[in-house]
Length: 331
Image (cartoon, rainbow, N blue to C red):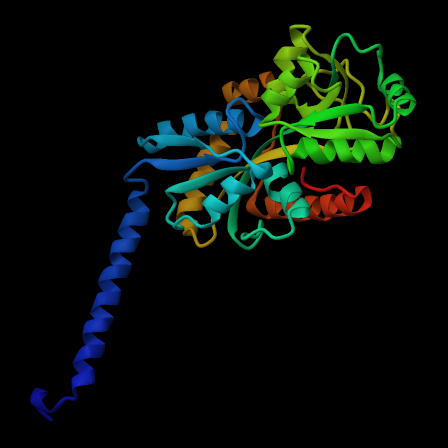
């Protein structure tokens, strides 16, 4: 058989196969050279919030390691679900990352039942950078000195007191709902645009209290503009060891914390996510990074992908249960 007698589809197949080989080689080279342009780092909360502080610390380390700009993009709203949707629909090429949180990826999916994205299916978890408690704060003029006194005051004023959060679907929102549920009090939720705004709402007397992320709230406590009564975690926080946990201060069984973790859109090549993971983990082992996270009220984690997935699934189950039992809803 000479070449002229070969069927036409034989040549088409060979051309297709050659194109696949060239494309695969180009993709492999592109992955090896990653990144060759700026990386977009979406944050699920407002500037000055816990996720934002974590993203800026990590972004600086990635910037130095990459030799490329890491551009922080705050997309607050709907408890972080606006940012999460944007990240989920981005090309899975490593040039979009998201600083997720317990609020955006566990609380919001529990509260908003018709999201266009899935916190597990649509993302590749890279690592949980840090965890931080929420902190129960009140205006200094409120006549209470402890969690028990606050609960007693709220019971004496049913429906007359309110708590602020960083927005519907935030970790602070459901931390407040869990507090309301376990303490047996009737308080009204008032959402703000981010934890810093909620803290200002308490300072300004718009709401009597809040259960807000510790990192952005701690400076206001240290300055005396806010009075802190307890932390939401199961054990005392290293940043404020003098504060009791809410559970030990009068609300048995109470526990809530938030984590900040880096994710990429599902389908992002593992060679790229592994590279990002290695850079972040190496940075978290440095004294400088540990000190900076501790100064913001957080604790370093540096989880594996598998540990991150397990934490996410556990929190999704927990907050779905809280939403159901407390009758929480978007405000």
